Length: 67
Ligand SMILES: [Zn+2]
Image: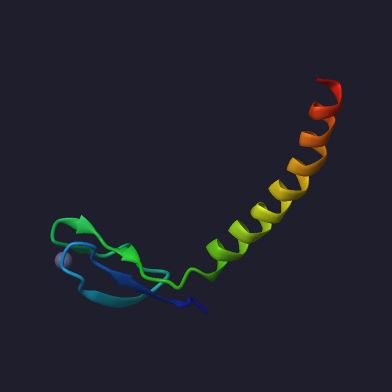
């Protein structure tokens, strides 16, 4: 069962709901983009942040000891 995708035109802001089976609709001579909430982006950024933070600690410590 295809899910419904909400598309939005970045130019005029017009929204259109289509099933994911359909081709990307066009508006203002441009392809409309899927208008979806972006909780995934926030989650991955947080995970990356904590990973970088963890990586930075020991790395900085080792460098300081050598030099
Ligand atoms: Zn438009």
